Length: 308
Ligand code: APR
Image (cartoon, rainbow, N blue to C red; front, top):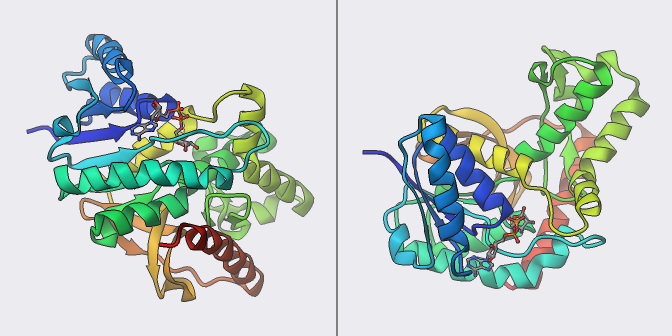
């Protein structure tokens, strides 16, 4: 039997993720949204593309959680995107209500699901989804680091005039302006960029990565990025459903790792059929540790505001 993926929120990120899953024939998809007609219309549109992709999966749209029953993976993209001059954190209270509602419903209808939270501010929303569902922390995680790393990889590829395929990037911390890129673990075919680029150029590209989401928001004027967020989410789903055990930067629950307790924040993890199968600890330099602590503190501030 094919696996079942529910996507909560049939907006830009949700529908783009559904499209990638359908195109790859990875699993059946249920697209859920509170807006009537939107998930049904987008699901029908994607279904009508399936013959062209030689894909036999089913894609259905719904406004009822009953149709999401027994999903293997649930992706939460529901909520409000940023507007120009808004930070991800400005979405906190509006999106918290959406996450509480959605994760409460998922806990009832798909008690064995693995949940990927995309809604911003993502680290805090992942922690809220975990608290609400009372699922094992291995089965609740957030998408952020893969997207940030992909942005940095794209910028490096343009700067160095090499294929982005040959670039690997690693970063830590919250999916926000205080993310912690790790240039010494960012490589071109295994060669650290610190060996082949000037520090000021690396710093400039890191800065562009930090504000990568805002750059797109200011260009779009309404709405936020969705092609790359959907591609990053798809990579996580694929690693879980195919038990690929990829090492990817995701928001995961830390319970002592990196000296951090009781907090969702971005770290490298092994993603497989059990969800977050391992948090990978890297030995950090003094400066990286300080940046990571600062990033964790800003996520914790949001958690405090939510009183969870
Ligand atoms: N339950 C289900 N769906 C909801 C709910 C809810 N309670 N509240 C809002 N939605 C739906 C909206 O109807 C809309 O279709 O969530 C969808 C959000 O889609 P978009 O506005 O297109 O936003 P999108 O760009 O997809 O971003 C969604 O992901 O990257 C983050 O910051 C981004 O938090 C935002 C989220």
